[in-house]
Image 1 (spheres, rainbow, N blue to C red):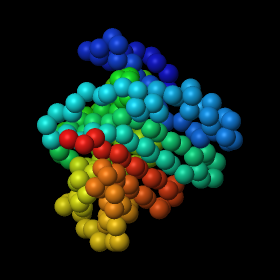
Image 2 (tube, one colour; image 1 turned 30 degrees about the vertical axis):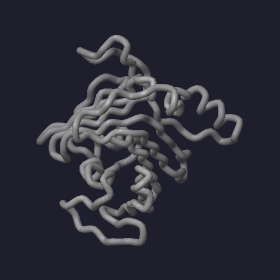
Image 3 (cartoon, rainbow, N blue to C red; image 1 turned 90 degrees about the vertical axis):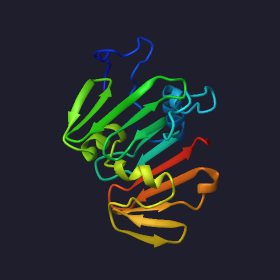
Image 4 (cartoon, one colour; image 1 turned 180 degrees about the vertical axis):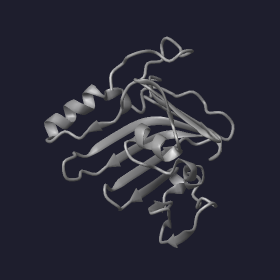
Length: 198
């Protein structure tokens, strides 16, 4: 992605950045890649704005494992999730406040603002693939990040958490404000959230 235009109404100091990147092939290149994308890993360098009442916020790390013909990819950002599964918003930013992506959805509409401007999507699956690099069940995240299954789909209790929608959700460290969701189906995906404490 490259910076083409600033979406209408965006604050001039808010600058989208593309946080999704291929993992470097060796440790030296990995360190260089992290340095070049350093804003997204300097989690302690700035305090993000306090989230709205009922919102979930914190740090989010997404890793998509390598598969034939495609290197592993990773994303590390601050996030704020607001609203409901039917009508909500997800902001992804660097800890210093630079915009990575802004997702908005409501019945019949889903949109994403990135460095390429604003795009519309048919559903949340397509939107999450663009924002996070792979399909992540955003609707379920409202419940998963609170340590419980999403009530709109069957779930199965498991040691340390539960299984739902093809994902295993680990809530064993919920007391430490950490929730991890893993999808085993290729390409394997791991989503790890470290929540801000209210």
